[in-house]
Amino acid sequence: MVVRNNLNLDVLELIFSHLAGNDLPTVALVSHAFFGAVIPYLYSILLFRLSQAKRYPRVMSPFAAIAVHPEFAIHVRHDQYNPKFLAECSRALALCNNLTSFRCSVDSLPPFISVLQKKDRLRDLRIYAKLTTEQCLKMVGGAAQIRHLTLDFASWNVMNLLPQWAGALRSSLTTLTLFMANELNETVLESALEQLPNLLGLHVIGCTKIDHVSILGLVHHTPNLTALSMTTGDCSARALPTPGTSLANLVHLALDVRFHNQSPAFLGVSSTSSVVLTSIFTHIAASSPSLTSVILKYPDRQNPVTIASSFIQQQLIGAHGRTLKTIALIDCYVDLDVIAAISGSCVGLERFEVMIPMRDLKLFTAALSNSHTLRLLVDANALNTQHPRRSGPSLTQDYLKQMFTAVASLRKVVGGDRRVWTRREDAHAGGFTVGMERKPTSHSAAIHWFMPRE
Image (tube, rainbow, N blue to C red; front, side, top):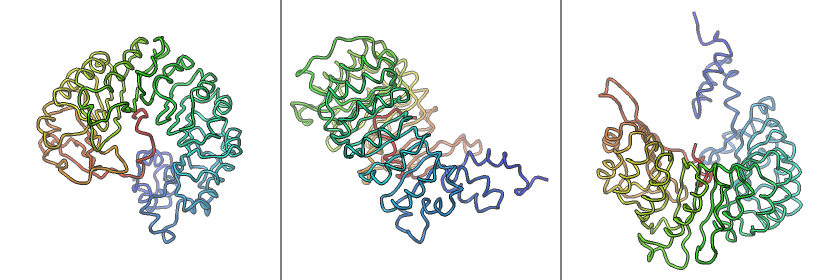
């Protein structure tokens, strides 16, 4: 007879590989056998949430647990830390020789620089890059096998050394992300990209001296790009370069739409932003890419504009309707007839992120019902991690029941209040039931909004 204590260890580990969250520590309390099998998954990610921090030191941090039990460090693959626990985290990191990813999204990186230099398996690095020249030189020399590099709020010291860092990562780097680096200029960026001909992902967002004209003039250095993110500029000031074929492999495009010369209130539906977006899509079309993912984000979520229907019809549906699987329209409105056109014409659409019109929910649901492939619907309000919607009408179970019925392929809806509604097949309940859980905020800053969705 098979009981919990005589199950083969390999079988237990296979079972536990499908668990996550609170299930892992719960399983660890069952027996010694369960504890031993769940350890590799329990300590794979070191995460310290605000709710735990409020109970510290009564509740031990995972970093302190690693420091007390260094034998667990071999299992750590990912680490997120709170600045209040720098000492414990540094000690834990020093023991985690198998670390593959590290993220520091606040200005607290210096204590970890020396520790990160010794992580030969580190592949994914995201840092708040406000560093001195000396600190940056240590990072350049210590992280030689990085595949995905994200530099947030980089100082001028870091940007001056970007070409040198790119040269050091020439053989390994596949994704370069530069976010809010105001000191970055076109000369420095070109010097870096010249050394990264095999780059697959380039994301340059919120860098005041670099706009889409600059980026499109430099992508000939990176002909293998599959993902591109950029901030729009003013087309009237500088002409786009002559279209080439350097974006033939592009599948993901994200645009940070910025207004120029006119206020958002004046722009309304027919805006200069549509002219800029049309010029970008026309330029890219010369490479004949097969876009599967498009993200557009507008600058003012308090006064969102309505995207021109003609732009959606021609540049998204007309040019890429056959290949698009993900469409995200953030901080903007879309007419219901456009929703219906997207649902009916984008024959492979699986993920749709849009501001759900709560007061026109029935008409919105009817527009979505044109889709036979949509699996995930995300209210774009949920993407604002700092100011999620907390008032006004919300999705209810009755609404979701109607939506799941009308859109048979739909499996999950993420509401603006961060509730996640899931369709659960149940033959005894008339075909399916609707389950709900609260979307955790702990991973809200794990990836930037413009990155490709999983």
